[in-house]
Structure formats: C-alpha cells, structure tokens
Image 1 (tube, rainbow, N blue to C red):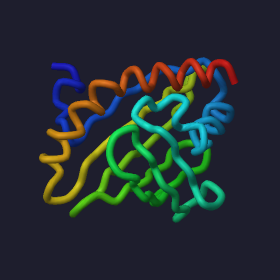
Image 2: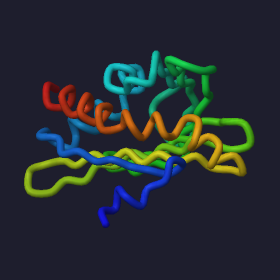
Image 3: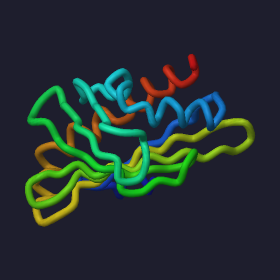
Image 4: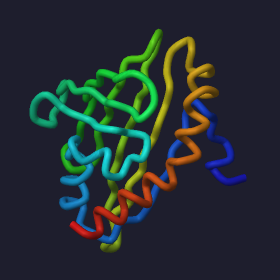
Length: 146
C-alpha cells in the first residue's frame, strides 16, 4: 500500500520535485501575494507584515468566507506552518522544502483540526485533496521559471 492510500480527507499531503535552487523556491513559496498564482483554490492571500513567525494575514478562497491565518512555525529556507481559523478548529498547512542531488522537493501537508475535522474533511478536504497535485504542478512550473 502506498503512503497516499492511508491519507484521510482531513489530513493529506502531496510532493513534487522542483528543478531550481532551494533559495529561489523558498522565495516564491513565501511570497504570500503570489499564492493565488499557483493555488487554484485561492482568489488572493495577504500577509500584514514581513513573512515571519506570528505574522498574520488573510486568505480569500474562490468559494467561502475569508480566513484569517497566522504563521505558527518557521525554519527559514526549509519549512513553515500556518493556521487558518475555522469554526471550532483550524486549517493547518505545513509547506516544506528539502534539497538533495541538485533537486528541491516541495511537500504541501494539509490538515483540518478540532472536533469538526472529519466534517471539514468531508465537505472541503475531498476537493482540496483532489486539486492538490494540480496546485503543486502549478507551483513547480512557476518555480522553475524563477
């Protein structure tokens, strides 16, 4: 059984290999104003200060209300986590880069948390999970042009 087969609709991830430096890939990954260019589910995203621990911002999805978010963890150049507030829980997204043999791997890990995680997984997660490979392909194309 492949690891993807064990993923649920409330916690799932996807990875892609980007043929660019980790530094250039990180720059695109942390440019919040450009997230909508590769994330097909977003209309826009804004961060209200420098991209750093505890920075706050807002996600505007193509469907549904705006979601405030906060960067809750960061390892500069390698990984960050942000949480978007949802009713009785969060949408937690961790984005990580690893570099090996001249290639950078980008992993996007998405998790709904809280008592309603299974409900949000069923209502929203199934669709997010379905488009995640396309989102990563979009990111890969942009990152390789940088």
